[in-house]
Structures are given as structure tokens and as C-alpha cells.
Image (cartoon, rainbow, N blue to C red):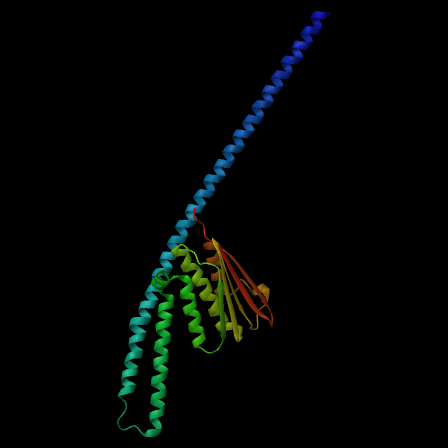
Length: 261
């Protein structure tokens, strides 16, 4: 009887050991499998980030070349035509009645203003200008261009210490802000623009608010200008929030955090 109990005990111990061993093997297999899945997801994420980076670089190179070409065309061709027109107008002195001289003077003044505006636009879209003075100063220059229209009262403020941002991403940030201003000029019908920039290394937050007519929230992503802004924000990547209330204006907030990895 004692021997039978010993055999049963041994069988139970052996069975338990085998079960524990099998359980251990299953757990170990699951662990290895999960580790492989994690490594696969990590490699996939790294490949995607690398691909996105290459895509961003290619897109920016194409875009920069396009802007550079447009800037050169404006400066060399359109600028030259305006200069020639100014020369012709200034040569119209003899034989012009006094009451017509005023019109010539006004036309010359308008052409000079057009030349200054053309020069400002040419500089603002040329990528080299951003690399030379940075996105913030380029944006301030753009605000000065808006002030010159005398259509808006522009108030600008900033706080915090500016920090270095990758040049290709500076270009994207500036284009988003530039598009925001263009939308305000074209569609807001407002009179005031308030801009505030907050630097908190490694994050910068830019808020642009107008007192215009606003628009319905469901139309946020339908306009090509706003779509371009959202696409560019995704490319950074950054968070872009657009809040608008009919009759109460629009507020655009761009939050970007620089990665040093």
C-alpha cells in the first residue's frame, strides 16, 4: 500500500513538473514571439520615419526650387518691366499740360510702390532669405508687409528665448504662417491681427488671431490654403489648431517641438 502511494506521489510530482515545464515553454515562446513582434514594429516604425524624412526632404527641395524660380522670375522679368515703365513715364516731361503732370506723378508713385511690393514678395518667397535671417525675422518682415497695406492694425509680441530649429523645418513653419496671413488678407474682412509667439525650448507656440467674419468649422479643411497648412503641419510634425466663430474671427495656433534625436 505504501509503495502504491509512493508511485502515485512520484507520478503526480512528475506530471506537475512536466506541466510546469510545458507552461514555462509556452510562456517563453509567447515572450519570444512578443519580442519579435515588438522588434518588427520598431523596425517598421524606423523605416517609416526614414521614409517620411526622405519624402519631406524631397518635397522641400522641390518646393524650394519652385519658390526660388518664381522669386527670380519676379525680380528679373516683372521687376525689369516695371523699371522700364518708370523710365518711360519719367521721360514724359516736355509738352505735357500742367494738369496732366499730376497724373504722371501719381502713376510714377504707384509704379514705385509696386516695385517695392514686388521686391518684398520676391524676398519673402525666396528660401535663402529664411536661411539667412531665420523664420521668426522672416515672419516679422512679412508682418511689416501687411502693415504697409494699411488694412490691418497688426500687434506682435513674443516671450521666451528663441532656439535653433532645423532649417528645412523653419521653411515649413514660415510657409504655414505666411499662408495664415494670406488667408486673413483675402477672406477675413477684419481690421486687427494679434500675433503672439511663445518659446519654451524645445517647443514653440505661435498664435495668430483676427477679428474678421470667421467661417463655419465644417469648412476648415476644404479650402486649399487651409489644406496646405494642415499638410505642412503633418510634415513637421506639429499640432495645428484652427478655431473660428462666425462673426467673431479666427484663431490659428501652431505648436511645434524640435527633436534633437
